[in-house]
Image (cartoon, rainbow, N blue to C red):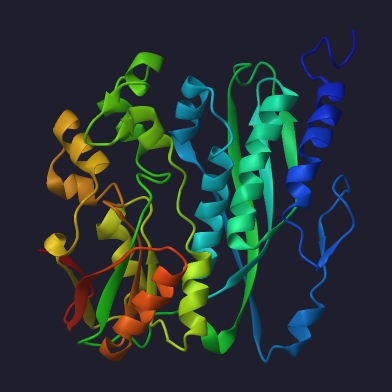
Length: 341
């Protein structure tokens, strides 16, 4: 009896590390110390000494049951982008710059090529957010998970000057809410998605004219990363007063999180065209409109609040890095909360 016969293949683990090394290397920043394979990821914080009041920001998240689609479609090279996006978007939402990222993959059996494919997506997400992939863990769990399944989660650390943190405290009556387009469903609401659509290879490979691609391609589209857009806004000299990452809980849960007491967000549903994937979900699942906005991002992955004088400059900055924007609402005096009309 040995470890391999019990279900854990150490040699496969070594091969996974070798296959992923080039992907990890592509994410390196000058501050990274050492190479992949050490006991800890090391990141030099010397640059922080030049900041007035540096604040470290952290975020951790996973991809939820979206990984089920990756299994069914046998496509594993984009799910890692989702894992990174869910963490770094939260850091950027507070005004921070993501510095480094670590991933955790739990699998029933270590198939090195599949693990390397997953990590290639993680690396791509890190490149998009300019964060270094400094380490991670692949844990083989025979008997706990089916051999062909895995789960993926991540952890990110960023930094921001305290005075530049986006806290929402200065949001006031008359401010404008700008929505930044999502790339699709992102990584939330998939437990409901999987009830609406039959999760079979045939169903996911069905082409829909309204989507312009197959259902599986639309649903597996990776989460958009907004780090560069928010950085462009900052570099344009705009003060973002509030920021909301529209994740689980949709509009109703996430928009109030950026508001101080005494102001109310009003969102105009006709201010942009809701993407076809959400219309299809609502129709096929007979889902009430309120539930749609309480579950999904509905085509808006992030919202920012700015002074009316900064609207054009903000939109131009986001669009300079490829983000699509809409003026989706305004701030009014009143009880903290959100109204969709």
